[in-house]
Length: 216
Image (cartoon, rainbow, N blue to C red; front, side):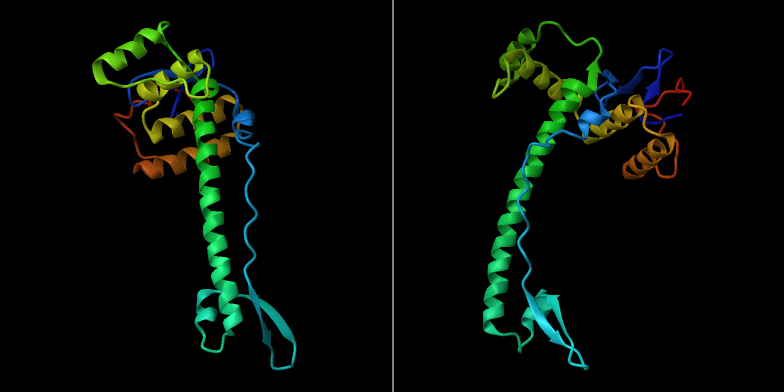
């Protein structure tokens, strides 16, 4: 029996989110893994090296680290190369963070719009958006998305999938719906439950995603 989702009689894989919504996980794991493949990652900078001579006269190139740079015998020109490397590494890390942030945004959109079919999703999301503005001052903006898509994404983000745990459960449900091998599913579940503090398959009583009807 899974603690992350339930399997209904017709085979539907259903997660109950922390806010009480039921979502049917779709068999799109192959597409989920391809999300963000158009994003270009920068090339990491090359670590400067230095030459080490062994007892027999043989030489070896080793990458510098901070300890080697701090050695008093390190040439000044190598210190300059190391400083330039650190600057390049900082730029690389910042660009990688930007790429990963964008990839995570794409994954979140895919999960909400393709990976999880929300049951009883309201038909009139414009009315919901007007209510958010009138009651709370929340402006639902279209951004770079078509209006209907932006509304659906905003509704799911604001009302349905509210926590990282919700996202992790839905990801596991997508993997199950897509036919991932049971051994891999068990490993995903064990890792997730450990991160939630249940550990070693301990009972997750009270967790909204648990159902005794799940015969898996």
